[in-house]
Length: 250
Image 1 (tube, rainbow, N blue to C red):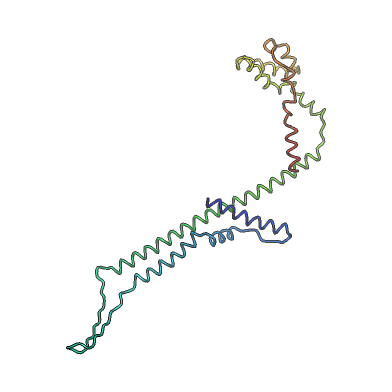
Image 2 (cartoon, one colour):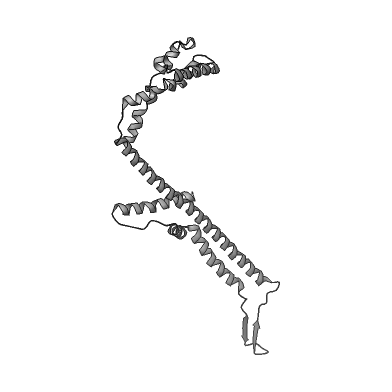
């Protein structure tokens, strides 16, 4: 939760920079040192720990104080007529030293907690800051890739006849995977289907004979729907959706 709050704060700081850029004003980007300074100044745990340190130091001064002496004067007594008494309290058993030691331990404990909190905040800010830097770099890279893709698409010349001729260079071997799956779905063992398809695909490649013609003459493949298996539309059925997405972000 603490890291999420820091990330949100850095993002808001970054949004201020982008807003100023949109308004035409220039502002230096948020540096790592500035991010740490902001987090340290606004962190309630650090503020509370620093206040506790002042209280602990004051408590230590109180613990180090010695008891005040007591002076007493009495008049109108029978004999003698007046009396003066001075009492100086004296603590035994090292009570004052123990009070001071407890206060010193409280100060050291508070400083350790403060340093641990500061280290944790610095670590959180470091992760959040560089996550933000990486995100900005990725966003910039994505914008460059998108711009390059649009340039390629807009400047592309498509020769459909040449593309079809390139596909036919394999003599239908690119459909071998679909043929294999169809044979297996028809009840043939996968090893047997693999041997048949591999043999026919190799013949198509070596002899230049279309794989579809070889399958039409293969007894084990008579139940196959060759028109459906050798349909290029299965490879392009999502083309319109993909191009549509590109149009949306263009």
